[in-house]
Length: 91
Image 1 (cartoon, rainbow, N blue to C red):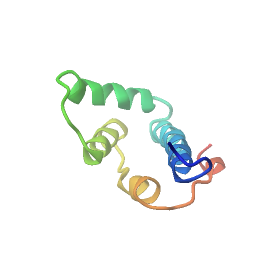
Image 2: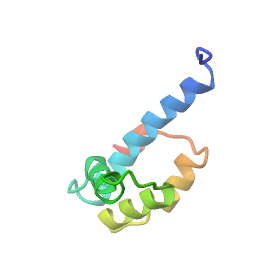
Image 3: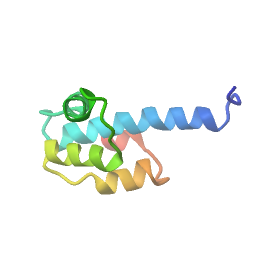
Image 4: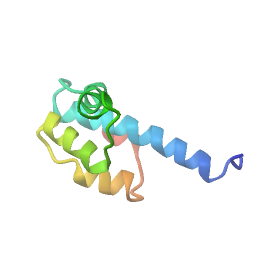
């Protein structure tokens, strides 16, 4: 059982925030043509049908291809790192 108000809550909260700002950044980089939905569909097309495995690098590669951008810094800052997430900066 997770400790209420402890680390587990923080991880879930951070995950939701990262997903939100990742979606906003993908939309910003593509003038709204691509969102996290398209990213998830592409990951499913590549890896989901045969229950294939994938890792963070594969996710970053898909995002980079769909956006024609480099999201390595984003992942280093917000997924792997501890850079503070300030939501209004992405809106």
